[in-house]
Length: 469
Image (cartoon, rainbow, N blue to C red; front, side, top):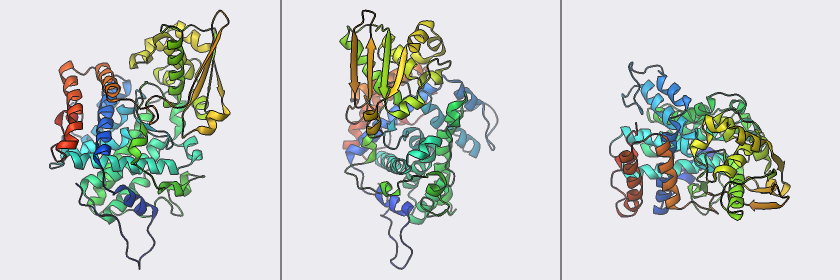
């Protein structure tokens, strides 16, 4: 368990900053249930990383030689101990986790905690002896708490231009690593201050066929990790980075909601973080669920339609309107392609977004028959709820309609343990992980759930720490 105490300030000093208050919120005791939840997110993350290895960006990151790295072939994650190899390892663990669009997500914060918090924690856990299971998972829970709370406070105008996972993510990574390293009050504040001043990630990357989105998660994880490490060495940072006159909210969040940062909650934010069953942008998932329901209603096989209308919340329509996707990434951000692929195959797997599938003339023709519209009620419920309505017309003129309020994997429609294991198995298989290694990972994930309850001070399973490749 961490030896940290809740942050307190002398009555004669300045009022506590938002950073200090946020750290105080994260330092309450973590319970067994939250640790077990964190362990499922850990499995989900490493499976997403494995699936990401097939993308060209993974090869680019493996060829990369950051300043200070040793020569020769890259190791993943690199364990040579140099600055460059450490950076490369974190960028691989963080950047690849987001490629298949199956990384976890918090709806209200509109961000993905896993690809930022978990690589930073894992990197420390691989290098520092004496960190037991409780210590590691508590750091994860606290990191999720920080990133989600900051994300909720950003405001809608921030998300219009900035990638919340990247900008809020630095705070989650810094919080988690500060906890894991046992930093004192002042050091933890410095860590978040210096992480916050590095916050970045512009949505222009979504408008061009580039790899930069993976840079967002990689940079956020590394910025938080390095900020905490620097703080441990005595490197100071601003305590009012969030609310300061020239701080994060003032610079990047025109409609910031700082009051949401510290709002009381009945549980840890990690429990409100959703798992994603389908390999596409989360904004498409409610629509995919609707099409799956229609398939089931109409016989369970491939679903033919003359025309089809998707009604959903505004961000889903604005961000995922790609009627003729040309690449894997465009297909993952296409409601039209998601409908066509689900209508043909049912439950979507990563291979359904591979280049050969995306170029299929039949799928593209079906996607062209899909119309999109914003539904005012679904838009009003967003981002607390991610809903959709799908109406299709068949060749005989009959119309069928299905609406879902929440996507599969949300707290209201949770994925069960067997669902998470099956998802991980599919991703590990897609990533080319050998069968024996895959089974070892899945067995370790199941055993960890019991270990958390029975032997919380036991070492974290090596099968969930060691490189898969």
